[in-house]
Amino acid sequence: MRLMSDTRTRITAGGLAIGLVAGLALTAGSAWVSTAQAEEPAKLSPTKARARDVYYPNTEDLAADEMRVIACGTGMPTTRMKQAAACFLVELGNGDKFLFDAGTGSSERIAALQIPYNWLDKIFIGHLHSDHFGAVPEYWIGGALMGRNQQLRVWGPSGRIPELGTKAAMDAMTKMYLWDITGRVGNVDPRGYKLEVNEFDYKGENQVVYNENGVTIRSFPAVHAIDGAVSYSLEWNGLKFVFGSDTFPNKWFDKFARNADLAVHECFIAAPDIVKKLGFTPESALLVGTQIHTAPEAFGKVMSGVKPRMAVAYHFFKDFDTTAQVYNRIRKTYDGPLSLAEDFMVWNVTKKEIRERMAVVEESTWSPPTTRPNIAPGKDDRATFAKNKGLPAEAIGYSDFIAGGKMNMDDVLRPIYEEASKAVGKELKYPEKGK
Image 1 (cartoon, rainbow, N blue to C red):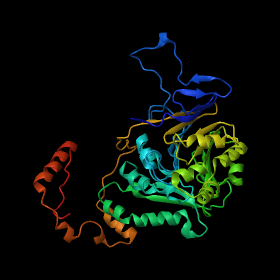
Image 2 (tube, rainbow, N blue to C red):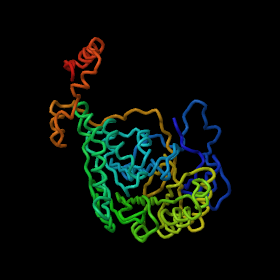
Image 3 (cartoon, rainbow, N blue to C red):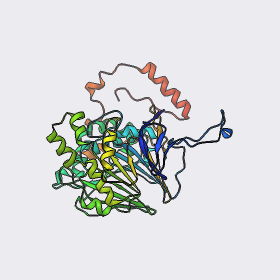
């Protein structure tokens, strides 16, 4: 089991708590107190369970009026084991779940939560940097292998030219993985390998890009790298979640993120640490840390205007020697509720309160349960696939040359089929030679 860092910044309903020393907190307007919920010694038991202030996935009901947000990627464009690239999961009390960005490494975090993949079929991409959509193939193909037997739906912005839009990126992705998909045809349930792409105008200002089941998701322009980046807001049941993806502070976020319950905006590491940790020149550090990305001081200024119930800073490596710099610089321009995000941080949001915790996850996970039965591959799957892709029929399966290289394993494999046939109560035919 894994509990992500105990050393973190926390905001509680009672005020600001700085958890930079495990077990201690500083609450605004009060003295130092213990973070543990004090219990009278007489009520403690050496054999009975006590409540823990962490989130154990799949052990808590989500109330009909509640939103849960889980950070599944909070790191920087470079990769590390501790923090995946950008990804936030939003779970609603109506049963809907949404992924905002799907950066590299985030699929491992999602897998650790053990959520059935049929419920993880909607991805909203902020822009097409690999650290924000690089794991889409893993959700697409890997999700199908792990139980999603319905199509994956992807939303993302257009580009200044068609070649730089989400549709072009997804078309290129499907071409790149053609060998992968072709090799699976006729062997597994084919339904999860279907892909629906919804591209919208990146210049739309607070435009509705999704409106189903009482959930409205809007997009608005972001300022990052080149034209074609966007931010999102999700509104449901009187609650509002805003996800900036990557962006320089801009007028659209300032306008459309107001009244947010949870506002997530990038906050890069402090410029001195870019020089120290990444080896950048001062000139490059200033350019990247203050012009391409959002400096902590600028993040604070944005949130001072937006005034969310909870401001969430992400997109920096949260280490013992970088967190204080980020925090102190934010506090130069913002004194409201704040979370400095790290992977597996969880926020439960209701109209009454916002509760922040860390999740405890199991690293050695397998596929989660399926929500509907898989179907066996059909005899016509290969012919249909070849026709739809414009491939010759002989492109699927083995050529005589490769089939001729197979060793004869009939004596050990045929009994496995007989065993399976007996177990399921129907004949499962052993493949003909060469197939």
